[in-house]
Image 1 (cartoon, rainbow, N blue to C red):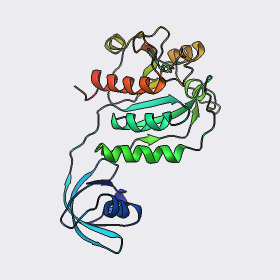
Image 2: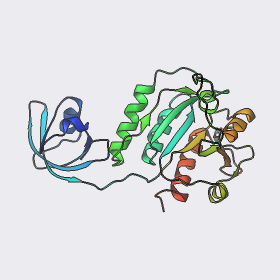
Image 3: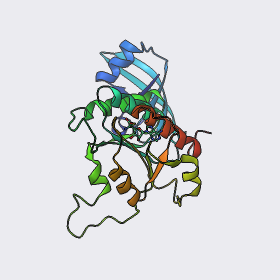
Length: 252
Ligand code: SAH
């Protein structure tokens, strides 16, 4: 069994787990004394522990070893996803976390039908749960929604602040007339990948406008294709992250 605990709660060689997480261990996972417990602190550390007591809605575990095994991709993938309707965004949060993204920025685009949301806290919970479930040692950062124009233009910057042309590395996925992804990766001046963030832009249900594609191009993002068929946005997000992890990251 596996749980995520904030690093501040893991001090010394014993941890006391209370509240929701203890309830989860006791009632859902039905933990018992002597069970092995894997603890992730969400910051890259992994601990092997053993449950030594279960009482008063609290679970106490003894830490046996701290391990440096990391399940993280070497890529710093930032998914910029046009906000989707209904549960589709939950799906994207969960699945792209499993696939190893480091950050997700919900974006409001020209064709967004959803322009306000109160779901950020819920998305953060989904990402944490997916990180725990897939044995990730880092929980992706889920940002507050941002206007795509603010990401791509100089809008919102103070006086004297300018964003340099071509400063963003990554790909904008476009069903219109994008380059084949493999070619774009092979031919683009991508170093210092994988250290620098790679942005992955996926549109909302209605797709990106031509102007958004042009702005993204001007920022240095390459418009790429996922083939001749038009995919639903959530399929596109999963495919894009999977293929980039395959071509550049740690899916071999
Ligand atoms: N506006 C389109 C569909 C947009 S699909 C239409 O209805 O005709 C939603 C998003 O998924 C797009 O903005 C794009 O980022 C991505 N996407 C879907 N199919 C794609 C493909 N074949 N190649 C690249 N990106 C794709």
